[in-house]
Length: 609
Image (cartoon, rainbow, N blue to C red):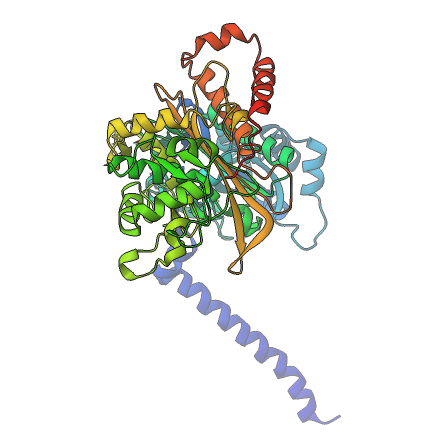
């Protein structure tokens, strides 16, 4: 072997080792000289997430719908636990077993399990083993003490809790992984609920983990404001329970309901099905995320007849006792809608047309009233525009402007009976609220007040008038006219409530798909005012049928759901009966219902709505 080869084998390792030593020397010098290195490696500043504000029921702070709970996530690093020197001044070093015992006791874990984790073999993830989630501040103080415990990584977190599960999900909405609102009240009032983050400045060890007892600056975050809704959790429960029952009982694919205070426009209940789990909002189907009470445009059907009649009566165009003939093929009108198989008397008053839901008579009334006056009246009732309810995604509805020549001859009679136009549930219940409130329409609202972290009220809703579409006299007249609907002579005898007067109207709207009405598919509605004499509540129920069913008519399906909601709400609110004689005549609700059915057979009413 040549001398040159031996010399090369000697100097090559020397050169490699020398280069490595030089590299390490440079890194060590820079670590001690360059201030930026020290700041990056050891001193850190981090924002602290503020606790998100809570959302409460109208009943007050004792009844939260949603709240955020701060907690800590604890993970174990066996290497750090073994290598760290843990001891208090003047005491000997704590052994690993003592540290493990402290960790187990603080988190309520089995000692043997934590010890096994601390002795685990090297494998993927073994230096970041999940221990527990805890909101216990005493446990946090113990595990953050570097003179008592080592090897525990602590991550500040908070979890959003929806205390009623799916209930009220469309109103509350949800938050994403960054705790930003992604739907409902959570989205609409995200800035108020979020609060202001805090700041901490402290020290980290060589592996980048915070030394909790070395914090230099600690500014606590300011929690978000609390939002108090007009939703009453008791009425909301009754509304959702009744709506869910109606979907199952009558075979509807979806449905929605709204309960509104007739005097203020406050909403004590709003429900929509299908629903979703707020904590799994991202995985929910799009159809389940939609709040149909405000985000869905649909032809309302015969519930619109009340609005048409109210507008015409208020204008002095007709009176409740004004008479129309019931001939569908009247030469004075263009292609009138039919009344199904029902055979009416040759003439009918406007009042009876509402009670029996005659398409022909109300169609003629709308035709005579004219598209311009009808359009202006519908606008005054709030159709074709946003109500301003405090939820994202509200729709305008569809109300074509006849001044732009968008109404043909057929539309003039169809709009009067709830075809050709589209509404949202919140628009419809708001229009009926005007009739209940002696003609004064109030702006619907869901948020009563907002209170900041110091208990200061930063917002309180003051009931706000949204217009007067009709006079008080006309409103009272219409309530009297509507009393006949929930009676043996009307189309909604199953909506009658023992002891209370009900002023309402049914609607059975044929569904349209791809521009054509579908045979056998309907949306059934009932909107009612209770009590009719001294109104307290307006309740709308709509069931959307995806298949043929014998219960597709509003009086047969939506009416009974309305009855359940209204009856439970009136009794919960302790509204005194305005028909006490019915309480004396009928000892039970079942007896009352049977008598109503028996009386209705005498009239042989077939709903034409």
